[in-house]
Image (cartoon, rainbow, N blue to C red; front, top):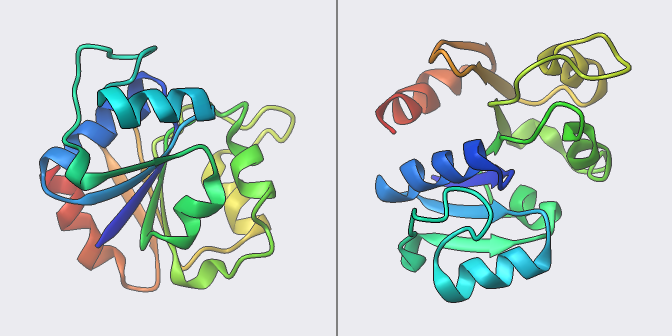
Length: 156
């Protein structure tokens, strides 16, 4: 299973580290090409959790969210709620039915008064959606793929 991660703050960095350490291939989208280049060369995020190093054989780093969507079976959203729609809106024309989204986004979407799962169901209707929070609880909605994906994420 190929996993994409959108977000390079502390939360995105920690989740990427856990997933790669468990042997999964990750396509990680970071905020800038400068940060992406640093991680490719030095194998750590210079701004967040800078003492955490990544094994490069499981990690592909980009600053283009479209690469993450195109190369992943599952995409983990780990960006601040104020910015998450920038990552969705720029890719509205893609076919979302073959992609499972996992949200690690905290809070409501500003200006919408909705949680991310509510907004995504209105805008894109992904094949399945897994909502997790920083307390460790998970909830699933979707096409039955959740039963396959959820155990993999529980082990990370």
